[in-house]
Length: 400
View (cartoon, rainbow, N blue to C red):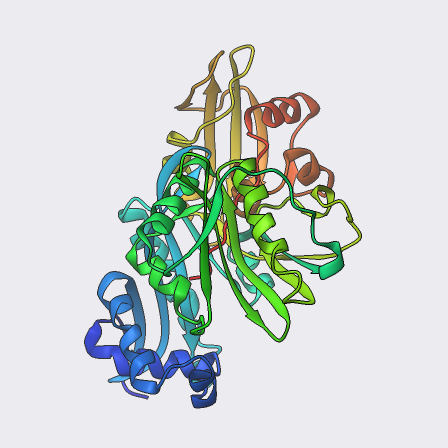
């Protein structure tokens, strides 16, 4: 082999980046044609990634062996807009497997995220055990529902109206921004994120917006109709009026389709809301995350207010980032607010970085993780920890 080295990839590496991506994820010419792309179009669509994302590559001489890309994005975490890194395009040619290339790229990428102030990272895992071993943990679910046409809800009162719009309609884009700013875990989509959101959708995708009685946009849905089935890619609403109005619109397709299938990222099943709740709903893990810098993440984390001053010390273990290993003490103030303090204060919580991530992001409650042995603490510490963590799961609909 030639001299192996790591460097940042640029637009000059577009061809090698695309070749490895397509090899690793088995994106064939037929796949591209099925989605309405040709080879040149899909290759050029990756150009902004190499311009705007941070992409590291292991090279064997001039030949790309492994790559690791990080999108710079922002996320609403319990009402605070935070800079995050979203990992994507993780791939290695099989002849270079077992050499630790990916682990080294991950470590360096996390170091760079820390330097950029991206205190938490996310990814869609191709192997949950592999990423768990490196400190990542599940932080969100993707739920899928399947409703027969006879089970669609009856029309209810909603004073507004639905209008079908172009995929890049300004009202749709601003609606998502409003939704993201009020929804824990939601990504604020920049231009790069919107490009990825639409990348693999076919020409027959439709967007529809619900306008309330004052003609103000307050909800939208993105869907296709194929083979007598309405497939809902995403449906969001700012209030129940918009939710009802969009479902009136879905129900209006009852004579056109045999079923409605959709994806739901709210972690709340929709069956209870339906009059006929005997529908099929499935759930699977979706996004994994990991805190990149514990001290920086805790310093601007919004804990819930408590009734009396108390302190906790997190004793953290991180398998690959040494700066996260150690004690992090937090003193909570009555009525809200918390301060990171030096030294060990109050009760202790022994926790690995993955469990800490899923607790602070609200995906799993401390009581559950204590029961299954992922955190070690006494009953008083558990009561305090439960009281300061907001009970809200992340809404993560984006797959970058």
